Image 1 (cartoon, one colour):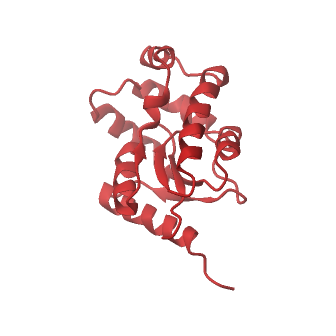
Image 2 (cartoon, rainbow, N blue to C red; image 1 turned 180 degrees about the vertical axis):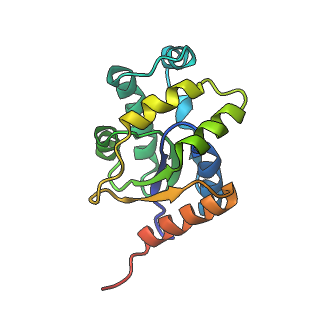
Length: 173
């Protein structure tokens, strides 16, 4: 890949954004950034307390991720970010045009079960439903792909890599 894209691994909490993002970045040979690390301590405290973030909480977080992505333009990178709403993705794209979004999707019960099993994460399973309610799937005009997470992480990462490579090397008409 001559110019690897900046890829945003998106979706609701518990879909495996970090797990898939780390694997994808390794396969592409680019850095990975954990989107949660861009949150302010106030945002983390709010979510830890079971309170969903509002847009005012998210704008500085999205801007920080957008800044990281802009710095990676032409070099590639993978970042995890829920990017639940179109307006959030538009803000990220404004900072770093050419981003590719991988939307990790799955059954609510599967995602909830995975959240209950994970240890040491500040996001409680009680916030899953608010994220599902806020989620706006990728539009047909958005560069990206939906990736089902029902299989093992290795298979999900392989599907993600295939989608990124296909987008980076479109077929000739």
